[in-house]
Amino acid sequence: MCGSSTAIGGLRVTMTSSTSDTPVDAQHTLSNEDLAPVAASARTWSAWNIAALWIGMAVCIPTYMLAAGMVEQGMNWWQATLTVMIGNCIVLIPMVLNGHAGTKLGVPFPVLARASFGVHGAHVPSIARSLVACGWFGIQCWIGGAALYSILGVLGLFDPLLDTNPVPILGITIIQFLCFLAFWALHVGIVVRGVESIKVLEVYAAPFLIASGVALLIWAMISVDNPGALFTSATNYPEGSGFWKIFIPQLTAMVGFWATLSLNIPDFTRYAKSQKSQVVGQVIGLPPTMTLFCFIGIIVTGATVVLFGEAIWNPVELVERMGSPVVVVVSMVALLIATLSTNLAANVVSPANGFSNVSPRRISFRTGGLITCGLGVIMMPWRLVNDMGAYIFTWLIGYSALLGPIVGILLCDYFIIRKTRIDVGAMYERHGSFAGVNWRAMVALGLAVLPNLPGFLNAASQRQLFNPWFDSIYGYAWFVGVAVAASLYWVFMTVWPPRQTLNEQETDPA
Image 1 (cartoon, helix red, strand yellow):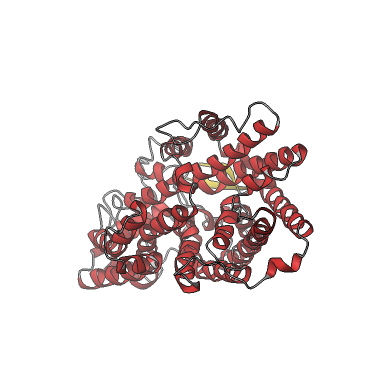
Image 2 (cartoon, helix red, strand yellow):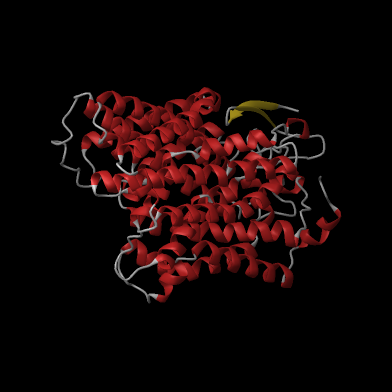
């Protein structure tokens, strides 16, 4: 048995290329050290380890920005907090269910997808997930680059007031772009050295961000004349709008925020000691952390309305307005370190595995990480977060419309069709029972995306290309996608069952 040791979320784990009871492709055309099933002896993560991983990923600047954006859309503090809590409780369900497969089978997401989509068909969901991660990777790099830009401005190395000429193609100034590239290059250097080099950064990621959030909360409470005013029930919805028109898309966006991890959560739960460990760890790690940190963002953003007359949902911009150079530099350095660590942990593991799955013999985890870095630049992430409306309706809801159907197919296949019984060895056989492409999953995926496509095109173009009725459907994009895909996949697998499902009822690798 050969294997390698790596660190994820500050924890050392061992990945093996074979186990005593699970054969893998002898020529390694479908497996490598990162994709192989984890041996039972290497599944050592406790509930606290899973919870700590979630805290490290959930406490991040995009979390703060998403919640604060709800205030900008007109919600009051308790409506926004309630939306965050409900959204995370909803997404926790597929997170725990999909995590069950990782813990039971010991395989990562790209390999698990082979059971429902086929060995070759699995490239579609794994690459779709990888591309979304590349977008998030770029967004985090842009946020870090903005912090670096602020530090240079405070230190007097350039005058931000004079840096107002954007590069035509990019839409940002040359100094902003260079700061983005500098922070991006730091990621590349760490990826080249390997995952082990981020271990120390990951350990300190959550404390840095929590400390920064608490500091901002204290600042908000002492800066306003009447702290109780921050907890007002007053709303500020745009004319012609109201709670429900804002709540539904915001809830979908909140679910979409972690629609990515609800797919590749097996990448992490395959290291869990037991189902109880992964369930308890996710329950105590995800909803409470997200709700608390979002609450901080909501209250602080409410304070900015009082102090500056506008809702400032970007903490980098907020810190810039605090005045004291020392406070700005110290805060920005903390944000840089925390953002770097969180980004590498949350947005490199999944795409690296996804790209590796395309050609395991040629693409290692390191190579997959470098591909992620390259695509993160090409996507021009500053355009995704430049406008909160685009961020919510185009980016978050848009990819949830694609990833929701994949979640529905995975859960239907694992729990309903196969009743959690899958021949793990067959998932590593090029000509085995999961060979080729499962057309049932591909057709179900395509049909489930269609209802949300007109609404997405309306949002992306910011024009009414299709009937407003489609916008209402698009507001429920993730929910619609999950329900339609799961239903269609069940029908297709029931009416036209493939051969392997007839034999797996007697096979239970657990």
